[in-house]
Image 1 (cartoon, rainbow, N blue to C red):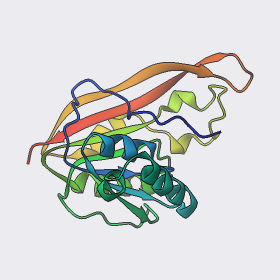
Image 2: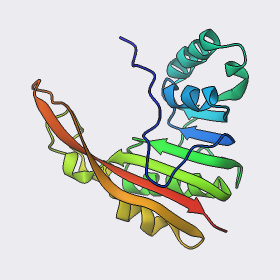
Image 3: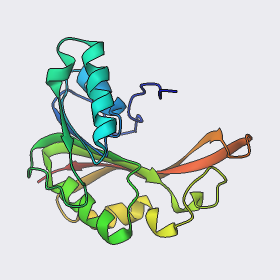
Length: 189
């Protein structure tokens, strides 16, 4: 069953305005398409050529100008180098890598954000390791907002840095509460 095409999570302190966006770990591209439908020019990067191909086809089905708004890039994000200061929004949602690779990736993502622009990172909070919702039992993959803020350095204003609870269906079919780590930061320099 195809995942419903949903907007990126709305976060306090972040108002989407059309510009140049990068969606790292784009998967099948629902977020990239959502941004493009709202006037963004999007670079969607993912390691899976199959996922990107499916979303490229979906984008073509949705509208005549939509495919021209999205550049689909097949790349390994652990080595991909985005252009420096090139984007008005860089978003990475639920990219879970070992700590060293994750820190390097998020540093490159932050470097790709233009002055006055936004970095949005969302991920599974460490408290979800044993939440009963099919998360990998590998605590190193999870991170907190505090971890993210500590890697930003100078030149950023943090609009949101917190943990947000939401409910979904657990692996046993009952409701389960999970927690998302959220960082919304604006480059000031």
